[in-house]
Length: 282
Image 1: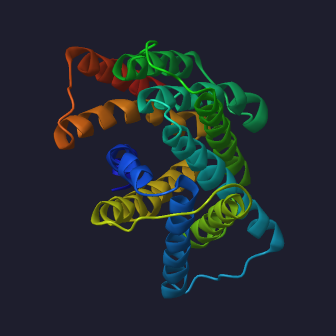
Image 2: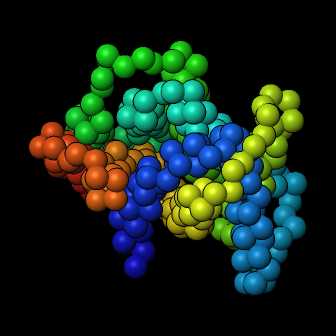
């Protein structure tokens, strides 16, 4: 089952593509994310009590876990949601964030003392080429400057948080770690709401369905798997699978949103898959 974790992660993380836009359409982004991570934190707290994991941890582990949550759930997801809400084309935002494996590979060596071989760099280059083919780059679209800035904030946040989480590798239970990370994300978005935005949520059936999907499948499912993969694999190999996210998202959009899946998408998927295989093989 553990060997299937990368595949399950790709499917669950990619599925978020089809529910992000409906959430933004019916709510203010930071309000929606604060609501999401309040429920996620309560969920992981329940799991921790159910499995009798020790909730109270050392101050060091508490701060480290919450800081990781601020980076992952706050700056990364907040940056992506905010950029899309400001009119940033989803494909271009995804293309910027897809630079994460390249940035992680460049930093994993000096920061984590990981040996990055030619096969990983070759795989990363192929993966990025494949993702670019799938996403495309429509220069004719209006690209808001604030959206570009927010997307790059998200890029650096998920890169730093991945390296930070790998460097920590604390021994607290995964459910407890995820609880404090979700709590950190919740507090981050609450602070944004208090000082910067006018909060609102329209609890329509569409919003409830989309939010339920992101809480259950993405936050509880995909994110937990990601934390496991980061802990048990090298950071550079773990993030290489992110190159398959745009292609898999395009397939989901074709299946569920009736969006076009053309030959360039299929070619990009094949190239990205080859790149991920080369980058992650032993």
